[in-house]
Image 1 (spheres, rainbow, N blue to C red):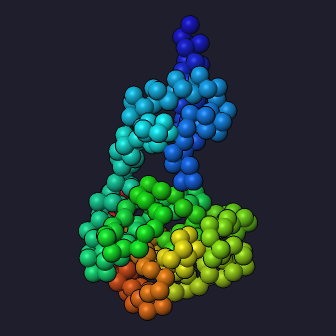
Image 2 (cartoon, one colour):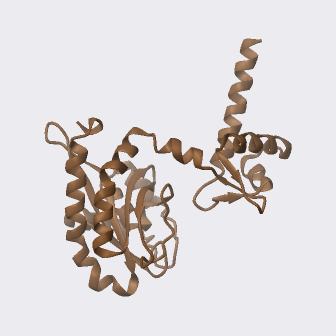
Image 3 (cartoon, helix red, strand yellow):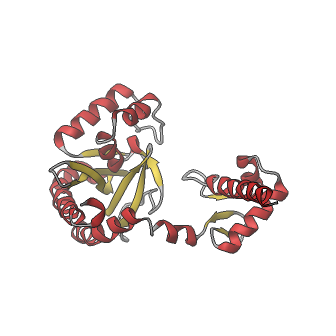
Length: 261
């Protein structure tokens, strides 16, 4: 009996996780039918799982009947030690940059082949962007992502260069050109984009490096800023030093935290 219960428990857990995995940046809200289709789960089973997940707070059912990720999952994600500490350390620096520029400021880490946005500061004067805290965007299509990709292991770079996806008509998807951009990012210490993820938006980003004991350095995150495209040529070059000062401050503070000692 116990063995059978354990097996059933694993099966139910696997199906529940599959339901949660149906949501992504391109599908933040889904209907019951869409979730059943994306997970290969019978409608009755999907309906029961959705009800349980909604009761727990993992999902929220909207007035239009679609489901979206609930606040409880976000709250749990914030407890991840490295991300929680990173946000706590970096938040004042992001606010300083935003106060000085009034533009959207991002902090991201690499999560596989995506840039995971762990913090963002924006205001009414900031250009609209698709990124949200907790969203994952392709490494090759955003400024913070290109910085993280330039510092990534060779196998990660090879995977991205093998089949880069196109988000807009301006997204760089030619592997040779992307490789040259990554080489230039490693040389200069910053990366920029222009309408590669969002039309009307340009960005520049720098790495947040941490010096570990023994002198080895790691890229812990990327710090970036987004401006309207019409301001890119004038403003992005002068914003690089601003970001570099903030990134050095974040890196110094991170080096003092237990996770990086």
